Amino acid sequence: MKNMRCFMATLLSIALLITGGGLAEEADHSAEVVKSYLQMLIDGEYEESEALLDETMLAQLSQGGGTQAFVEVNLYPVIGELMEVASEPMFAGEAQGFQVYQAKILTTLGGHTATMYVDSQNLIAGYQIIQDVEAAIVMPEGFTETEFTVDAGGGYPLDGRIVKPSDPSQLVPCILLIQGSGALDFDEIVGANRIFGKLARGLAQRGFATLRYNKRTNQYPQIMSEKDYSIQTEYMEDVHAAVGMLLEEPGIDPERIFVLGHSEGGMLAPAFMEADPALAGMILLAGTPRNMLDISVDQSNSVMDYYNAAGMADVAAAQQEVIDTIVARKEEVDNYTAEEALEADPIYNFTAYYLYSLNQIDGVKLIQELAKPTLILQGDNDHQVYADKDFMVYQNALSDADFVQMKVYAGLSHLFLPSQATNMVDAMNEYYASAEIPAEVFDDIAAWIHSAQE
Image 1 (cartoon, rainbow, N blue to C red):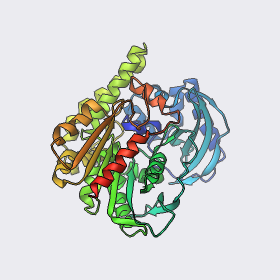
Image 2 (cartoon, helix red, strand yellow; image 1 turned 135 degrees about the vertical axis):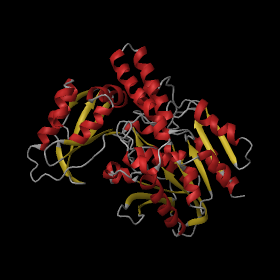
Image 3 (tube, rainbow, N blue to C red; image 1 turned 60 degrees about the vertical axis):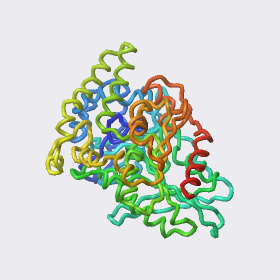
Image 4 (cartoon, one colour; image 1 turned 90 degrees about the vertical axis):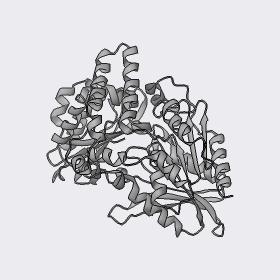
């Protein structure tokens, strides 16, 4: 996710924004700083831990109520309570001017890896805590997965994977997979699950090629600190480059290239279609036509209700502060010009310009104007994008469009995995168990692609 924001499935990758700083000449003390910081979080020494943060990170945490609010409201519901630093922090290299350390940590929900970024002053400039995940997905017989680099030409080449038939003489449809919000890798790892790895395998079993690649924010997280950071730099430029490369890729039918967006990727799928007329159609998995901040408020209210019901009034109050901040600034954010957005302060760790760029997209209007084959799928037990709110907007606006198909699946989560959760916190906890996307979802996508070709 982008920093502390509660939006869509990528809450399962808790990552604070990496900003500023330089490379330390000596790393002797950095491992101890990392270990001390993690131990302070475990011990609940939140104020003391803030002395180990750089100024930018400290300011960002302060916007959300401080370290305690972040840990108790956003971190613990997702990864479980921190219990132990299970390994000594080890130097893992240098990235974007920082020393990178990794340590194994144990939480009440299992083993995790903490990746910590340390600046030249031996201060923590950012970190990411991700659960250890299931093994890499193996593609079915007759299909081969190979490395693939997506390069938009701006100095940000992205690692990816393309899956195609082993027989090079075959010409097959290809689905371009685009992740939801956050600094996600090409497998869209959420909790213990490789969601895009599962999608690539299931689609290959039905005869389709796929391309998936790291988001730019995953491979180059420093771009999130730039004032003009937007959906253009996070999504649009790389999607456009990927489509152009697929048009020239051997074995891919250039007339049958589709884009599949999950979560925020689904939200933006109509914009991808508008930018690339060569695309044959779009698939929206748990997408939304609603405003990002409206969804953030809904999600934050859900979390607050959970903590109130659990008798955790202090934690619920911290969540209420987040909601109040969003509501107080939403109207001004929605009315920014581009110039005003570039100069405005962030809101809930979104840059104002990022929100401005999102607000320029009217997904429903684009779907109507493009009139291209469109498939909209939603789980009815999604506690992050809602069947009775987000999907209903699509349904009410597009039910008469003969080029649109829509379906809601009973008992599926935001990740299209089986779910019995009754609230957002429990839903996220479910992601820590590996599960499978039902065959029905893949069968419906396959049938829709075949019908779109007729």
